[in-house]
Length: 231
Image (cartoon, rainbow, N blue to C red; front, side):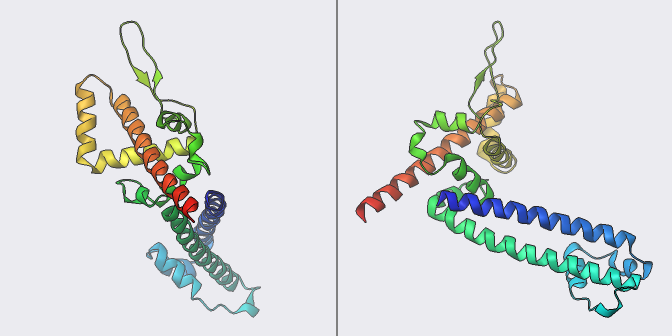
């Protein structure tokens, strides 16, 4: 299922890029459009704008006229945007179903959304058993501590190696918890009071997140293996 998750995520990424390009083209085309078309569209929200353009009924036989050419182009771009939006929603449903099969507990943890959970499962791979310990998973995610001591000062810094996508995901989770979770805020405050810098405290927090994620993935993998053996 991990390979299926990977393929769907790649497809979703390209769909998001295409939707972004369609929106940029809509905005650029409106800027260049005649005043008669542009002025009524200026105060609309993005969704209102897209739906209004998609509902237009331009005269397709008058494509040689500038105003109708703009109408045809804007309608086409808006319909493209909506189609890609629906495609992304369908892909999200499929990705969510796979994530819930592989590790539903991840989605129950604070700060871990669907995309974050999917990325961490992809980083762990089809056979998380190959990871000997949670320390090896932390190293794979680039959140293991790296000694950076100098003289009498003993400290560690962030690891700049590992899977950068997983590292970014764990960083987003850590920052989200730091903003919203009182226990996380208390933990970071305690580390800073003990003499750590804020960056060092966040490094420790990211290491904790990796340990938590690894435990969830491994417990679920054991359950899957046991159910397969029983079957």
